[in-house]
Length: 364
Ligand code: NAD
Ligand code: GLY
Image (cartoon, rainbow, N blue to C red; front, side, top):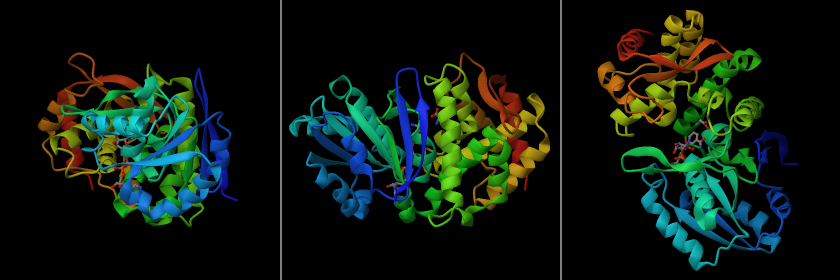
């Protein structure tokens, strides 16, 4: 049996099951439940697809529905508005219609890109998220944010567009490079801090080595993260309020990525550093006990993630002012009062940010 657990995202207009499976078996049954699918378009990266072709074909061929692969290149450069034209043309050439189904098979890049294509092709056709990275399992495949990049900003063109379902085949993580595992683990640490309670205790008690495809800890942590994110998205799909908490650590992370032109740090590494900045500011602004910051730094070490950067604090603060999530001139932060009690939209002036990033440089 492949099924591990299903967690529901309930938005105003749609119920989206997020299914955790050991492998891909059962995918065909789930697709067969969708009414009237006439053709399937598998949007993926060639390198990921080549590892899992036989498993995908085993599921898709018996359906007797025409299917076609469409390959995109990997990385942020490929997740660009300019790359969409070729994919739309391939869909048109292969006769994709309103009853076609897009399968997004890959990490967050494929999921965001293919979801964006699904949301715009013929004003929206159905799609399914099949996440193959830890980050995509716990974060990007859940919640319906789809987007592509513009020259001047990441994820600047997109929408909220929910998949029919998410099917996470955890065996795909067996081929994931260590750095990508760490990326997902940074989001797991973020979710556990936001969620607090038993999840935070479990995350603290484990480390990088414990999260692997053979460990029972892995499905537990993925399920807890998905459950947490699903509950947040279910109450605020369009990020008018509560959903903003999911950006804990992201204000600094985006600045780090932008200053280093997305080359030095992976997103997860930048989030890890950003979490510590947010916690140090939380100590001053929202009464966080410094013990939580210490424990977070210890956990980041245990999960082999960075917790500080040598980048200039002034330069980072300058980039934060350009973040699309800021209103007017003030920099808005998500902060923590304690694990499980986040607050959002807290204005923090750049002087405080600079001082705390400097303080962060002295941690260790
Ligand atoms: P990614 O999609 O670039 O994947 C990371 C690397 O792993 C790539 O090189 C990819 O080819 C490789 N890979 C993927 N699956 C593999 C597998 N099973 N085995 C071996 N290699 C594999 O990166 P990501 O971290 O999954 O996603 C990052 C993207 O997600 C960013 O663009 C970010 O903006 C987006 N994101 C979106 C949301 C959202 O809510 N929509 C949330 C978080 C992040
Ligand atoms: N990754 C943040 C969100 O989905 O809202």
